[in-house]
Image (cartoon, helix red, strand yellow):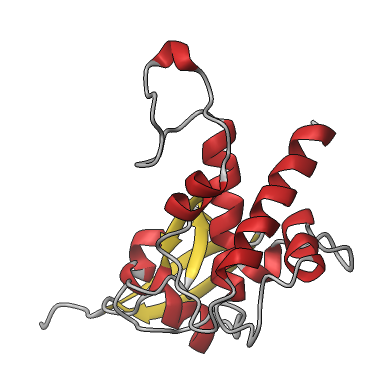
Amino acid sequence: MAPSTSSALTLNINGEKHTLTVDHRTTLLDALRERLDLTGTKKGCDQGQCGACTVLMDGRRAVSCLQLAVAAEGREITTIEGVADGDRLHPVQQAFLDLDGLQCGYCTPGQICSALGVIEEHAAGWPSAATTDVRPEAGVPELTAEEIRERMSGNLCRCGAYVSIVQAVAEAARAEKESA
């Protein structure tokens, strides 16, 4: 008997469980887009280099084109479809709109998911490559434009809306800090 090349699995996406059978080689991105019709997550380079397919997996950023769907079972996955609260945009989404953090919009879902991860990582005190003082006693570094650019560097925007994207992430982080 030949070994099975597919598995039935349950993915927890945006708070809902989805059961499907996938070929073991199916990426999370393809399962989201082609099997579950969650097309907000975009397929860019399909090599993990552009960040267009960024989702949150257990609250951390993940490029879904490099994740196998079978490895995502049991994880909490958030796509762009799960970011807003009904008709009310998430503050990160609103900041992108208010500050023109997009042009064609193709990279925007990945940028927003990545921004959510960046804000969470920064608030938790995680240093980046741009953090100058990584000593524990230094505390949480200021979320400067340099910090945001470094932390968002895995997401490419071919339209070049970077200045506005950095402003949107800074504004959303500021608003979130004030509301906490």
